[in-house]
Length: 242
Image (cartoon, rainbow, N blue to C red; front, side, top):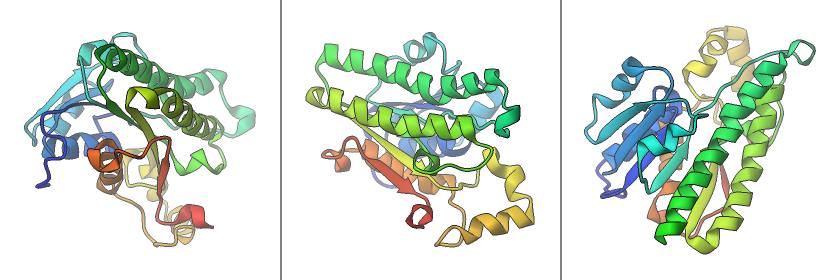
């Protein structure tokens, strides 16, 4: 990228060790930001994210922990990209995995947004938060009961935060990715029959790349989107038009 839309800014990206989080971290850095990537997966995956691009730093920490934002320090942009998808039929769904899904996909973004907002309100400065939802913020898929519930709730959390924080100049938006080529769905995409069924539901006829999701996220985080808050942007190849 040749743009410098984030020059002089600091950004925190959760889930930065892989997938959409990794792509967002790299793009923000390429556009001039100093990026702190947060993940639980350890040094090696984070180093793989950050080694190719200057301006990136990583913190190995659990997004559910109290220390997550404190270890990152003050930031101008928060991207809540960390997420888990644990597939189970309803009758066999372990309650502990339901709770784990809500803790990572919903509770962690709330806690990070709360601490981000507190710091910005105290300092009297604006900021931007982007949450990574899903097409399942709008529609359900089989075997995804906890994931669907968490992502639909994240959409409404985005709106609630946007309403409350707008007077302080803090914008809060969300993206709703469709099927994206990441490790989360690698096994599914390896099955030709399931891949064909998914592609048939996508008007553009292909899966998204993580970089395409990062482009939308970075737009919502930058000054070009200064009058956008409380929005959820589908990046789904047209899935939700059906």
